[in-house]
Image 1 (cartoon, rainbow, N blue to C red):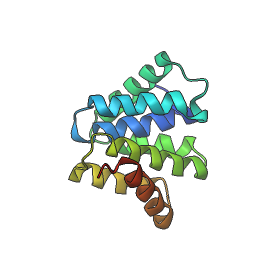
Image 2 (cartoon, rainbow, N blue to C red):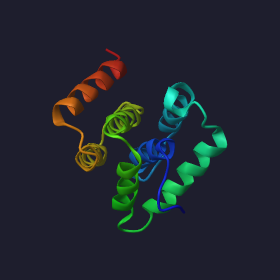
Image 3 (cartoon, helix red, strand yellow):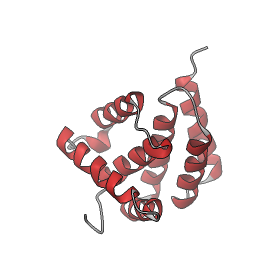
Image 4 (cartoon, rainbow, N blue to C red):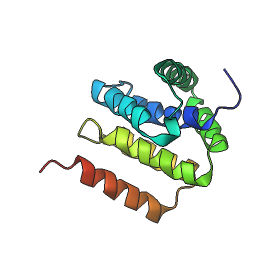
Length: 137
């Protein structure tokens, strides 16, 4: 596994990390990740094989006790400040994908926000936008 990753892999790492926060990567979350990778311009040259490889690399890195710190360190190093906000937005999208937010997911969002130095006001705006997209009633 590389000591550095590119920006697309970093964004995939954030989504996979968010998805695995409850130790189960659900179908809704997988569909959300796939849809994001297929639709966002930052992923224009990422194919399914690249997505799967990056996701597996992330899962492997998360296994050790200090895995989360290692993953978020690589992510932060790979992303510009603007893309760190994008990473936080993608984490929020994945967290919201199954229609419920568990305590582990809320805590992980807080950790991601802090580790990536996402301004609290910007994070609140991102969270509100995601909440609006996923509200059904």
